[in-house]
Length: 231
Image (cartoon, rainbow, N blue to C red):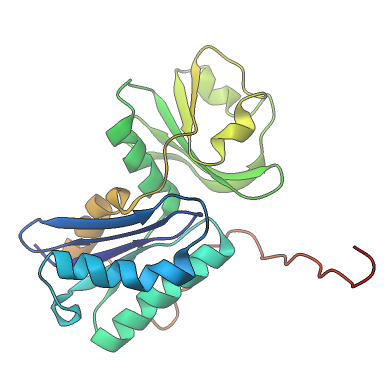
């Protein structure tokens, strides 16, 4: 088994993990929603590597949550991942953030559903989401949309669904249906990156470190600066 560093910064949660060749896992996470990526990411990485008795030179690959999600969070996480891959001359593995979130949900939601819909807040009334079946095969690709009463209606004709993630709260007053379950307490974690990272490593499914960019999905729009005297 390879030694892989895992980085998840697609939302406000900062999550880092290292799995070593003996299947020992070390995880460091900040779930305070404070966007602590810039202040804690590096120390989390160093601490997790030390816990599993590795040095940076022992790493075989870095796996990073690629988006969609927070522009700033993704930029920081991917930049650190690429820097390590460059410096250590090791491959970079990219994993869709929604798929990672869906894997976390499967570990924490014990009721069986026909469809699993991870949601990440996309600001304003939009969410990033994708639709997976109960084996987590992709049914509808990643997209950004404003949720309304008809969202996912075609899937409801065929079964039950669970909606989860930090964007799920936007559905509570809109998607009122007995076959829909909404959970706001499922958060992104590097635990959802372990399985796909190992699979991609074994298949040598790597991205080009030089040219890889996060999957932002939407263009970044900066807020307008305040003009003194007009606040």
